[in-house]
Length: 324
Ligand code: DGY
Image (tube, rainbow, N blue to C red; front, side, top):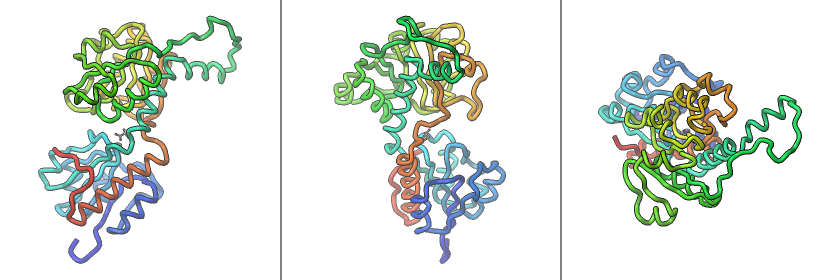
């Protein structure tokens, strides 16, 4: 960066506002036209970069950093989850890692609650019925779902998105229990009227279990066959965090066997693939990882990532740094 403008590599399309911000600080490289770069190609283009902006589809670890070179100062992830980044490997090389918490909280909670309603009220199933031109007529026993008022929502991970989900659920008349690595502050519990339960009790109690914990080595397959068997046969699972938090094969089996009543899924274990066992089931509502997919939210995420890059390149503290 001596005397020349910094090189900023952006792995995939980001909104123009964020590109404009990055251009204030350096020369920006983006794949044009936009496409997913295979790792080897990404490693070629990142060579010589002072900053990199990546999305959750790209892995940034030791090989990425070494391909970039010792001048790489910051990797800005355009996502709140950073399981695609090997934070210790980058920290070891003196590279700052940032993510985008806060700005996608409401959008993600909206999708989580939307999936909850979609699966409990059989909206996807109803739409498929209509689109398949299957004859139907209104009658009192037709396509009955489960109401949510008076039911219990079990939140796994009462962070920002978990709390936003709880707020939505309370507005729909649900009561809230939660579990996680640690208890929320007393004022948060009081505000949401949320009761802490150990995970096994939450699974046995909740009418809907909604996952909001990050993907870590501890939460991979947190919801496995045993956890699914611990849920009520009338209960639903909602996952908007990361696919591998759920053992997808075990989930498909549980849904087929009636171990649980249904699932609402925005994320999948091996994206973009979906376990074939899920695709044929009517008691699953699905979306292709749309949690933060609004124009406003994606703009806010990419802009925050760009501001983090600008801060690090200016020698300042970034707004939202991930600490190893
Ligand atoms: C995230 O930010 O982690 C979402 O999964 C993508 O927006």
